[in-house]
Image (tube, rainbow, N blue to C red; front, top):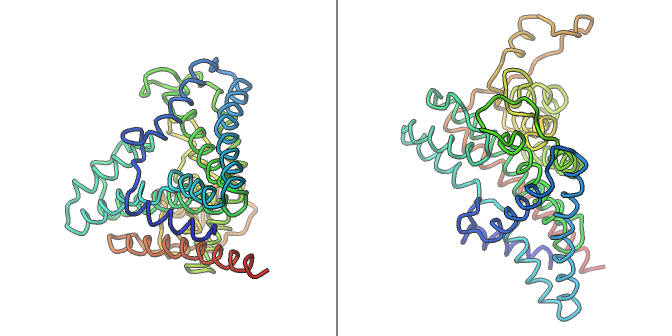
Length: 355
């Protein structure tokens, strides 16, 4: 029944998507209120207080969620299926990012660069990672940014949730994954870490959200690599694995630079996992998704980076420049990845029924 419940959750979410913020989404509003309340009452800038708050937050939601599932299963199995369906509906978020992507694609196809830029910036503002030069982006750069965000969002909203649903009992996996991702993002934004003007220089960041960041890094270790491997299977396998091995660090540095960036590093920006996902996705699609090609140009010119003077230069893979037509390639890659996981879950469910 897990397979049918997941399919039904996808259908309902496509038909009636939830908002990705607190407006009109009372579940999100309640979770956000609890996270804010714990932060207001426990954040004095120390990591150990963040650890305690993280456990209170997680257990305060996970225990009732799983207890209701066990109670429903004891009373009547269809009640447990209905509860699992409700949880999946609130945790799966395909339409929470796809509408932004579709709006960007539609605007670029119509040649409306201003609308495409505004849609991209609105998307990044929602993620609390706005661009400073968004008004100057070309169509190719808009496509590049949209593809990168779609790969990351498809993992965090869909593929990672599906894997946790497959691995953990009942509905506890999707709830654990989405809550961990939410806290890593919520407690590590610039405004929450400084408690000051978000545009002010970062001097003494709070360590309150550091445990939430590390916890999500641990929880996301297997899902991130599973999603990257899925991109390889449904795309260009050899190029995806090569890019994963050789260019994950470059993609991490390009997407989340260590220098010239005032935003504190967090695991939500999760440079390592993000680099793996983007490198594998870029290789699978045959596209170059890194904006800053300085390191790549150095390698092509035969120059070496610091600490690599004794290392022989390796061949550099470089994909095609993303265009508006590449956005369809990204949609196809994500949907093939989702279908592959659905087929895998369907086969496992069938094997369970026949055993």
